[in-house]
Structures are given as structure tokens and as C-alpha cells.
Length: 609
Image (cartoon, rainbow, N blue to C red; front, side, top):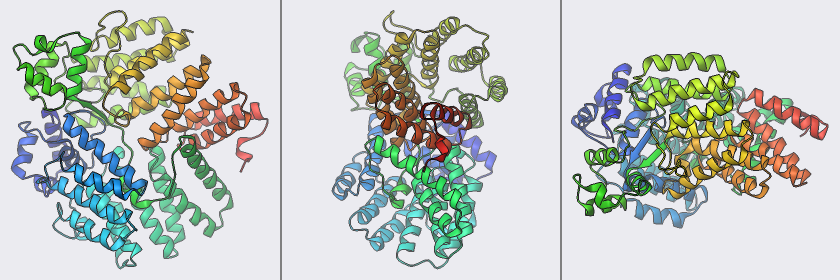
């Protein structure tokens, strides 16, 4: 991948005082890790991800450039998840044979993943827990040479994939009645995840799954209060991070606990949340089924991927450059042709030269800002969430801290900080919308210069660029220029859909795009298109395992049905949207929806079953 991430890995490992052996063991050799940490060696996406995960950190915060081949492997993981979720053994078997084309089976992580999916094939085909258990244990042995229970006690570091396998092993053992010592081992695993996965964005991918399984064991042992307490912890982790999976399984467990505890009021609320999630799936045309093993294999994704091959091609075509003109002095035309079609991964040095020749000064791939300090990316995430929740004073304080820690000579850092200042001035009423739009246009042009008056959005934008375009569209809407704002969303959507990269890998921009695009179309009375975009947004939420924006989309769609005179659908979408928003703890938004429901339907939304 990139030199910057290797150095970042080194800093984080030193902070945690972890040995290279503990991080590398079973994944790569220590000499290879040394080279990675010095920025001398690039490694594939999956290995890089696992190394960060063993430190309890998520690389989702970063935009990562991957080759076409790497992307195909990542997309194949999604197809595996779908086949498990839909109990499609034939498709799973086909993917098992196809997957080895993308990865070096000599790498332990890739061997492990193949064995893990082979184990899942036994599960999908007749729920053969004994065979599934056997192959899961074989898979875990690819990277861990000692029993996992012993390794938890000894402080060994685990990546996300290893924890998923451990949970699958524990689940199979439970189903087979082999539970001796299992409860204690899962308790230790829960404590390990809470103490070692200090990044909440990474913790939520495994912690709720672990507490859900442990809660099932507690319930079986009649430790109902403890099972209920675990449900509360799992729900908190999911709601605070906007995650959707395994919310259904957590709520099912909670329902059983509340019945046995005789907590009628809480049980009624739990069932409302269950109804909201079930409605979300129905509205998106997706099947919802309780399936813990499938839930172990999937988790929320908030990262962003760029395919280097596509980036070069799209930018060259937008600039109206011929392959011959672009490659002159850098590489052979035949080489460039292979790069653009994905048949060859670009040499890093040549990639940067190609991009620089097309005016893109981007030698690193990063999140909203560029920094070698991982902790700063964590602070940026908190900042983004604070301003989206209307916490203006907290966001002001965080932006000031971020600005002081950034190298402001870098264009992307200047973009991010200036965008934050403009946003704050608009919210406080200190900057007219028209001026804000012009300042934001100037800001986005720093890294995305227009190719003409009609060519402002000509490639998939990076994170900060997308956020600026979103702010531009919102301010145009506030300035009563609804057609112009819809045009921006339309062009952004065209760019995303033209790309080979699935919308799942543009998780957060995708959710905001679907939410605002559908809402603005409704305001402009383009009702059929608003409904189409809104339903796509619900599908996107499920695909990314993110439920925090789904409630907003449902409530917006209720207005579409109101205008269409479909009162029953209007009421359902508004009510279930409200309960989803409640589930994710968005109190300000729930008050708005509650009042809207009361005013329109003349009854309290909370009095309904």
C-alpha cells in the first residue's frame, strides 16, 4: 500500500508497547514488518488491515488506493457474505474456486480466509456444525499456533478475521453441546476486545457479536440479568457507531430476557425497535432472518476505496488527454493501456508521475486530512459526528485542535479546516448562503479544478471534496436554488455509478447522498425519482450495515407518500423511521418527528404498539 501507513503502524505499535512478534506472528515475517514500518515495502490491503486490527485500530478512516485485482478480491468478500446470508451453497462453492485467482495462497491470511469460507459452506449446506467446527479450527491454525483460549489469556493480539473465526468455533461448540469452559472463554474474549480494540469504529465490528453469543449462554444458564446487561452493552456499541449488524439478533436476545424478567414497558419498546428494523428490510426489498453465523461474517464498513487503474483512466478522459500524450516520458503506451484496463497494477512511482502530470498533487491516500498521526484521524471522526449532531461548540473546539496539529501547507488540510470554518459561520448566521457557496466552490477547486463551466464534477470525489459538494448543494437549497442543488447530486450520483467501485465502499458519502438527493427531489415534487433514490438509500444502509441514516430516509419518504395521497404508507414510514432514529439515540431529531406525527395524525407516536 503506501509508505505513510507503514510509519503510522510503527507509531501506533510503539504507543501500545506491542512487540513486532505479537503483531506479525502468523501474518507476515518480522523482517517484512520492519520494512513495512520503515516505508520500504508495500503490502496488500488485507495484510495491512489485519496488522492495524491487531492493534485494535480501523483503517476505515482512510481512503485507500487499491489495484483492480485487490478490489476484485475485496468485492468477492461481499459476495461470500451474500451467499451465506441467503443460504446459497452453490454460489458459495463457485466463489471458493474463483477467489484463489485474486490472492497469493502462500499468504497465511488468504489461506485462512479460504478455509473459513469452506467451513461456512458446510454450515450453509445442512448446518453441519461438526464439519464447520473442524474447518474453522483448521482455518484459525493458519495464523495462530496455540489454542485461542490460551492466547486470549496470554495477551496475544487478534485481527478481526481471527475473532470472527473464534466466534464461529464457539457457536458451533455451543450448538454441538460442547460448552465446558466456553462461557469463561467468551467472557475473556469480551474483556480482550474492550481493552485492546480502543478504536470504537473497529470494536463495533466484533464486540456486539461476542456479547450476543455470550448472552445466549447466560440465558441458557438462567443468568437472565447478566444476559440483559450484555444486551444493553451491545446495543450501546451499535447505536453509538451507527451499526446495523447484529442489531436484530441483540434485540431478539433482549426480548427473551425482558419476557423472563417481566419488564413489560421495556419489552414493548424492544418490539417497536424490532418492528422498525423489520420494516427497513421490507421497504428495501430485502429478506431479514436471524442468522448468527452470517452476522459473524459481516460488520459495518465506513471506509472508502479508490481503484488506482480507474483513477488514472477517468482523470485522463476528463482532461481529454490521449494515452500517448499522458505516458510520454513515464511509461510505454502499452503499459498505460494495461493499467487502465486493470490488467496491470501501476508502479507507485509511475502512478504518482501520471497523476501529477494531470494536475493531481496526491502522493498519499488518506481520510479527510493528511497526517502521519493516527490519533488525529480519530479526532476528525469525532468532529464530523459532533457537527452532524448539531454540537456546535464542541465541533468548534475540536476543529481548533485539529487545525493546530495539521500541516496547513497541504491543500487537503487547508480544504478540510476552511470547510469547517465556513460551515460554522453559516450555522451561526454570520455568512450569507450565496457567499458560502462561492467560498466552497473556490475551496473544492484547490484539488478538483474545473475542466470548463459544465465540467466541475468529472470524477468520483475524495472525502473532503464530497463533503464540500454536499455543503454547496445544501446552501443552494437554502438560497432557494433547488434545481441547481439537485443537479449537483445528480452529477455526483452519475460519477459513483459509473465507477467500478461499489457504493458500499463509499459508505458515508453514499448515505448522505441518498438522504439529501431523495429529500431535495421530494421538495421539487419529483416524487417517483425521490422514491427510487430513497429505496436505493435504504438498500445502501443495509449493504453497509449502517442504520443511523435509514430512519431519516424513511421519514423523508413519508412526505413522498403524503403528496401521493397514500396516508397508510405515510404513517408507517414516519412511525418506523421515528423508532429507528430513537434506536440510534438521536434525541433532537426524534423530537422533530414526534411533533410532526402528532400534528398530522393527531395522536402520540409513542402510544402506538
